[in-house]
Length: 374
Ligand SMILES: Cc1ncc(COP(=O)(O)O)c(C=O)c1O
Image (cartoon, rainbow, N blue to C red; front, side):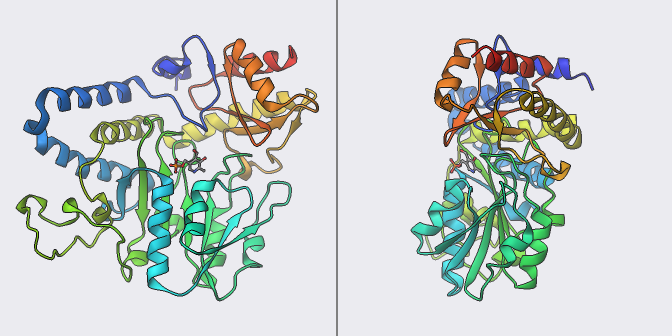
């Protein structure tokens, strides 16, 4: 695999050190081309291309299902993860009386705010130095726990959750596990059949590099079968073009949530971004990210910075590294690095560098020498 060639196919790598992939990743040139072509099609053909748009709904779901190893009937594209968590909260609220959810205490708000909004009590599970084990969740499972909601990779520290172990424990108590894979898909493989989670959401602008504005939702067939889909629209029926307004028989699958007209530009981009990654190889991508991030981690430990990302076990590894200067504010450091064209994020007072497979050793050295010079 020639990573240099692949790097050149990502315009975001040109003339700068881009290490903000956990916020928004760069798009592959093919993804960009497909998105532009779809924009042009909408502009130049409008409704003449209606059939293409509807075919895209089907083909993008097929590719997404393949990408995460799920059935096409279990996936649908929506606007974002916050939206998806609202949907799932509404489904659980409608179908039972349990009103507590368990979440990691450094979970991203999209996974949590919607549950507060729908009246669930949120129990925060404390980490041990940013590491979570399945048993920490088990200790808090009671009869009124409706779900465990976790990110597969924590947005702040980059800790990779022991999802399988958490699902195994949760199954013992018949508690569904809802996975936020936003920081995971595109950097670390997700096999939904193997994991056995009840539902999964992924905002596609991060590691998938698919542009901003769409999210993938997966709802396991067994989880959805005794629940009501909270939304429906004209595209939620088997034959939308009959344009019937009689009480409908809505589809039985997750496609119900497709409701109406979609951002086809994003949909085309996501489909292509997933194809690009599958061609490169998801395992290769993950290995490359872990190798590069380990280099950064090791370099950081030689500097006077405190590193928060737990790296005691390889099973924890991801492309996100979180660190702080003993005195200087993270926001100040990030803006000083910007002057050197090195781009990292700051989150909750810490710096976050996030490394994708199209980054390289020079990017890491640029960050390290930038940090040394401060
Ligand atoms: C773990 C995680 N989930 C979700 C999101 C985005 O959520 P939404 O799609 O609701 O904007 C982010 C970052 O923005 C994130 O880090």
